[in-house]
Image 1: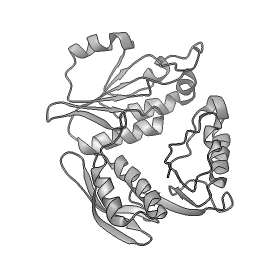
Image 2: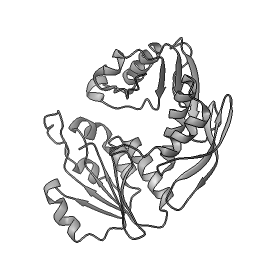
Image 3: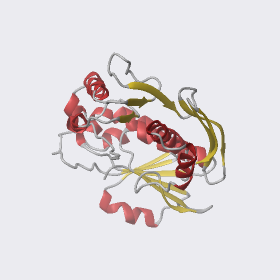
Length: 277
């Protein structure tokens, strides 16, 4: 068995022909490659056509039996469908316990090994793939509980009543919105400071409004200069495109090499660093 996280950049995921696949989203991204959302969705539908057994997707994604010969099953955080969570309860550290509903019955009392509602949703998707492959329910339940996450995916470094630090790779507006929502759900009464470094000039240009909307739901934003990765600068495209549209209570624009000096005098309650850089 090989488990792979596919990447739609440069259509590289079209080299894969999996037996079981999970599609979590079909949002506009990598528009330097695809030019618009329609071409992104067409590529995902082509990927779906290459799945040989079972395709597991979220409700609302525009993939139907016309796009693939694979069996299509749906998964969700808590919207009733083939695989979804119910009877959710959350402890003080943000870990959820829930019942996992499946086409073959309910696995009761699952506990997610890492905090945040978004990780419950991810665990439902992973469980759907594992159960479809034939892994016994008791092993799936144990795996959800023992999972400790991966580096830079809701990565909890410090978690005390007066200081919490979480790092996350989110660099698309919807990923940022999900990360911020998860943090707010866990710590509704604490001050949330987010440090974000935009990734790519093209993505900053194409999604400045969406980034600003997602980042306006934090208490304080510390925005860094763009991480260019593979790209050359684009005239007129800087982090200010996002910064000027953010409506957070407090916001600061700083170069990465000045960040640590800024943080020396920064009172931190809940701190989250976001971005691919």
